[in-house]
Length: 127
Image (cartoon, rainbow, N blue to C red; front, side, top):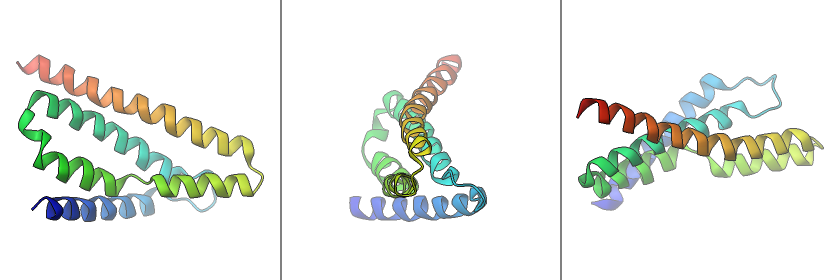
């Protein structure tokens, strides 16, 4: 059953990534905005789900497999991030590659923290 949860979640995440990537993608830009935004949104969602799972321990098992491992694992794009960074470096776009890599890391962690804090704030207001 766990394999099925991860597989179904992964399919939903990958389809969401593909659709959002088509929506965001702008071929005239050299900066890989689609992957950047998808990873930042994925981090925000991870923060929200982590906070949710802290408040509701039952979400730490099957729901975690479905949402975190499956959906967010299929949605976020570390391999695309690595490839796009490499391609920017290969094209001699060192400052852009560095900006992309560092902003993905730092803003991703900040987005995760914001998602966590937002859920904590909203949840504490309702209790």
